[in-house]
Image (tube, rainbow, N blue to C red):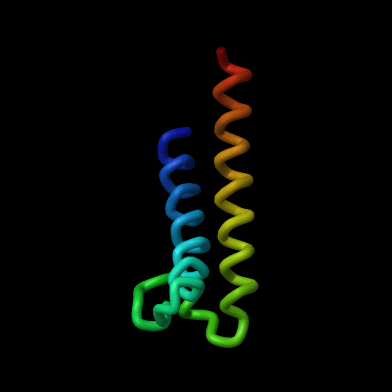
Length: 69
């Protein structure tokens, strides 16, 4: 189960960080498939939420693994 949570967390991180990197590189993230493209007006906020959610999920799985061992 922890593996599934880690995979979802990594996907959230990629979906949150990639549009920001593309925008910083001068490319249009609107042409790519990102979850944040669904939120037209609040795209930066959605990216930040996905990044924080992914980071919290990864942190939680790391803590759980340490407690079990």
